[in-house]
Length: 200
Image: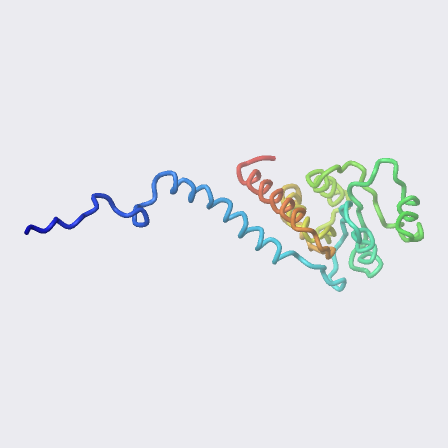
């Protein structure tokens, strides 16, 4: 009595098959997303903090748009950490008196405060700051903005300030929600990439 020949599969089991082209493409497409996520984690874990008021600069620049920024800048001036303050991005009809009233301080406390009316975004904040620095012949400034916004603000300043001007980051602590933090990280990343490619 003859035995039946043993069954031998002509193809490899599905579990052992090599990934196809579509699988490799899917993996390649996932790499940028993974890099973005890892970068976001780094961005959120390394947010800058406030600078000591014992460190002095010629001037202090406050970028409008977040709670606590104005009072932090005023505190720096009154502590002797800076001689003069620029508030960049103020509404065109806002006066010193109106600003003092809005923040509950005496108008006389703003005698060394300049209001910048020409900035509408971070890029124009930087350009307005550069003009103010040149006007007063400053060689160092304290930059006051939110922690999440600080990197992008410094990036824009590096584009327009002379190389010899030192920028001291003085971040106002904040607790941004995840979507806002991701949006700010993406804007910083996109702008950084654009500048590396030669954008103005």
